[in-house]
Image 1 (cartoon, rainbow, N blue to C red):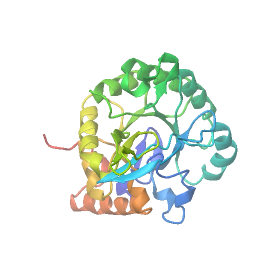
Image 2 (cartoon, helix red, strand yellow; image 1 turned 90 degrees about the vertical axis):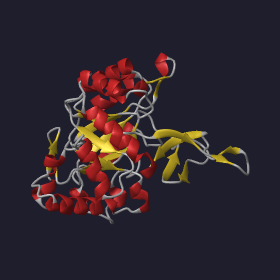
Image 3 (cartoon, rainbow, N blue to C red; image 1 turned 90 degrees about the horizontal axis):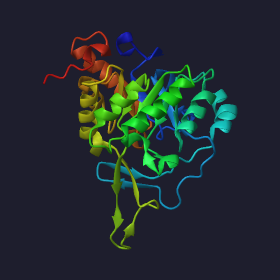
Amino acid sequence: MSDILKIELCGIKMNTPILAASGTFGFGEEFENFIDLKNLGGVMVKCITLKPRVGNPGVRITETPGGMLNCIGLENPGIEKFLSEILPRIKNKFNVIVNISGSSVEDYGELAKLLNVEGVAAIELNISCPNVKDGGIIFGTNPAAAEKVTAAAKKNTDKPVIVKLSPNVTDITEIALAVESGGADCVSLINTLTGMEIDIRTRKPTLGNITGGLSGSAVKPVAVRMVWQTSQVVKIPIIGMGGIRSAEDAAEFFLAGASAVAVGTANFSNPGVTKKIADGLEKYLQTQGLKNISELIGKVEI
């Protein structure tokens, strides 16, 4: 891989600006036979919570036109097992970005503190979850709550804190500005859109959780728009994600203002898609006469 794709994001050196999105790439090990993991910018590993979670009952994934719906329910082995068994296996293989989730501000602070260890490159906050102490308010849809949870994590770690923004809001820039004020080093967007599918034969929802998160190609135009809007108001870098399947898709996000991109749902249909995107992006930059991907960031002509 040439230097044309090399970047530094929040002090993290990356061979490419292509990352694997949380929830679609396991803990990275599962893809070792398909791609050279060191050629990824990093892996946003499966979401980790304080205690193990078994996830939601019933059907968890269903394919939709242009994407998929999922309601996994944050199934994971918990922070203790991650630190004792999983992190030691993966920490030298790629930049490990740990996605975390909690049900209170204190949960995020505690997780950030526990993950302030060697082998963790950064922490990504999944704030698309309810704060049970505040009556179920969703952190990611309330600017004050988003700022508070970001500050709690930032206070407890020396690692870069990335905040993953929910698209299920009226104005994503309000949330972006709030987490930036809370000390976020970077934002990643977008998380999934809320969707639902009904089986017309049974007249019941397909998913066991009734609703789920919509991802895939169908959400890309929304994601590109939100990345562009966010880039207009924040000074911190943006990781763009949502429906990226090709180098052309990735280029759109860079033009909109992203400094890096993460690939999610496309990994299910093609486990080697991140390499394909990186190779295609390198060729595109060469045809544009650019020496580094940074020269493309935010260059959309309005």
